[in-house]
Image (cartoon, rainbow, N blue to C red; front, side, top):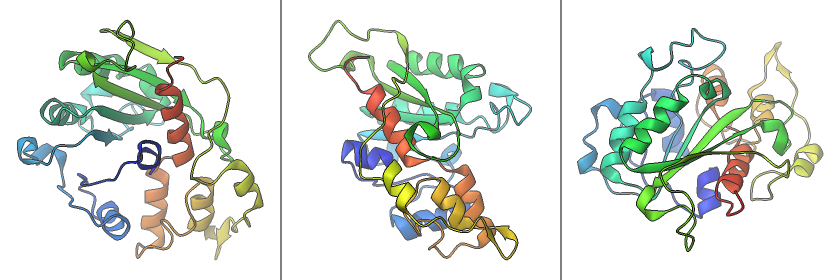
Length: 245
């Protein structure tokens, strides 16, 4: 959602193997879904300008065993294969903050090995008005020979750059801090159980984006728990594409 809004782009296909996530994608986007990225012939896939991926956080999360690149759920090598074949102009990646101290340098090295430079940004959901911290790392990668800042050939050779948040907040098509404050707060509980509508509110999503789907309550909560606050991602893109950084 954030990438579409920021780049004024349109999602044309996806690769998702979870049947519940796939169902929500079908209802909201109605685009081709190529399934498990481990089994895709990328040479046969339609070229794209922007590739986004939020590879599983469990290998890097503080809540897990932090096996990093040794975890069987570490699928970035398959994402790297897609990047190397499709050669998108932009690659947008997301993961938990724990990725900074485990696995990030390997991911950046792999990107460099196929000719991509990168910048990254850690930003909290609370920095854009969400009522929780939920810090995440966002990475933007781009072909080294294209350079990041057009018209400035002296910037961004084969280097990796970390960007710091200056504390300002984004203004975009998503719900703003003031809009969130004015919205009627959904009840936290529904029949003595966590209300998915409350979680949807916490995630900064349009009302009904997930809860208005045909998914069950349990499935809705899983989708919301695995999701990203779109305002948070949008702010990261603002910082990562700023010529001042």
